[in-house]
Length: 228
Length: 228
DNA sequence: ATCGGCAGGATTGTCGACAATCAGACTAAA
DNA sequence: TTTAGTCTGATTGTCGACAATCCTGCCGAT
Image (tube, rainbow over all chains, first blue to last red; front, side, top):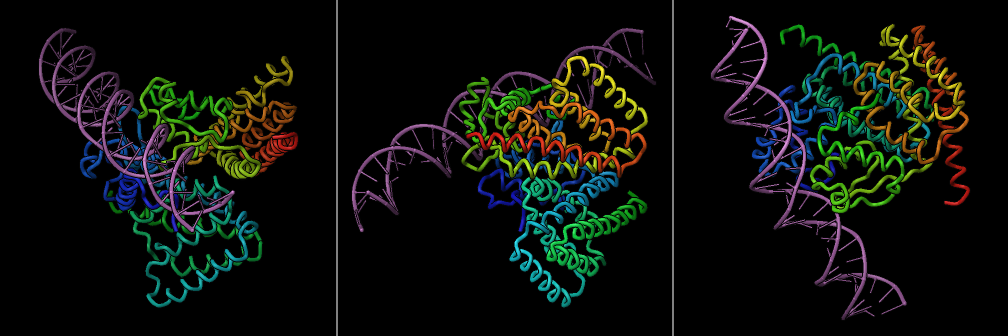
C-alpha cells in the first residue's frame, strides 16, 4: 500500500529511515529542531554512515533541510508552504486522474470500486471515525496515482510529497467531519474514471483536493490564532 | 543561473557530483551502464563516502537507478519515459506560468523582456545556431519557474527533472530549426505574463512544450529507425 | 544436455577514527 | 559599553578497513 520508501527494510539505513520518518511525521522530533548525527547514531546504535543515508532520503521528501557543514533541521510547518504544497498537489493529482482514466485496466478500476464499497460498509459501522485520515483516503489516492502509469509522476507524489502531506495532517490533527463527504467525492471520481472521462475526473479531483485544502487551512489558521 | 545542484561546490562530494552529472548528461558514461563505486573512487581520487553521497543525489535527478546490494546503473533513454517526462513538464511549467503571472514583480518581468530582446539581437547575428539548446531557452524557463515562487515546484523542475531533460536534448543532438519559432513563443508567453493573464500564459506554455516534445520525439523515432 | 547447488571473487553496506569546518564564549581594544 | 578578534569545543565531511551480500562460473546430479 505504500511507496518505495517502505520496501522491506533490508538495510540498516532503511530501518533507521522508517523510524525517523515516523518520528518526524508524528512530531516526536519537533519541527525546526536540529538533527544531531552523533546523538541519533548513539540512539539507534549504528554508525553515522547509514544514518546519513537516511537523512539524505528525508531531505528528498522535504522533511529535512540540510546546509553544508551546518547539519540538518526538521522542516517547519507554515501556511505558505501548505498552500504551495496543495497548489502542486491539485495539479499533479488532477493529471494523475486524467492519465488514469485512459491507462487503468478495467480490472484495476473494478478493484477500486469494490474497495470503496467495502470501506463504505465497514465505515457505516464505526461511524465517521477515521476513514479520512486512515488507509482509506490514502489508498484511494495512491491507487489512482499508480494508475497514471507515469513513473515520474508516481515518484514525485508517493515518494516526495506524500510524507510531507501526512505530516501536516497528523500534526494538525485532521480527522474531522470531512469523512463522509470525502467518500462521496471519491465515488464520483472513480465513476468518472470508469467512464473513461479523464477531463471530468481531473476536475473532480481538483475540487476534492481544494476542499481538503480549505479544511486543513482552516484548521491551521485556527491554531495560529489561539496562541503559538 | 542554475539549480541548487550547482552551488559553488564547497565539498568534495559536490565536485564529483558536478563532474559525474556532466559526464552522464553528455553520454560519456553510457546509458544503462553499471556504476562501479571502487572504480570511480579511484578515478576521482577520493574515498567512497563522498562518492556515494553524489550517487544518491544523482538518483534523485532520475539519472541513476540504484537497487540495494546491487549498485547503480545509468538510466536508459526511451520513448515511453520521454513521453512521461514531457507530460509532467507540460503540467508543471503550465502551472508555473499561471503562478508567475500573479507572483512575479514588475521588475522581474521587465528584466525578462529585456533579456529576450538582448537574445534576439545577439541572435540575429550568428543566425539560428544555439539559442534553443543554449542558455537562452533554459534561462527563460528557469526564470519563469522561479517566478512561480512555489518552492516545491521550483525544486522539482530545477533540481529533479531539469538534468534529465538536458540529457535527452544533448544525447539526441537537439539544436534543430526550432530556434526562431521557440523565440517567438517565448515572446508571447512573457507578454501574457506581463498582462497578468495566467490562463493564457499557461496555455501558451503547454503548447510551447508540446511542440518541443513533438520535435524531440520525432528525432528519437528517427534514431530508433536507423538502427540501434 | 540441462538444471540445481556450491564455492570464489567482487561489490555494496557499515564501522570507527581523523581532518576540516563552523558556532559560541571569552578577551581585549576602541 | 560595544565590537572585533581569537580560541575552544563540537559537528560535519572524509578516509581506509571490515563484514555482509550478491553475481559468476564450475561442478555434479538427474
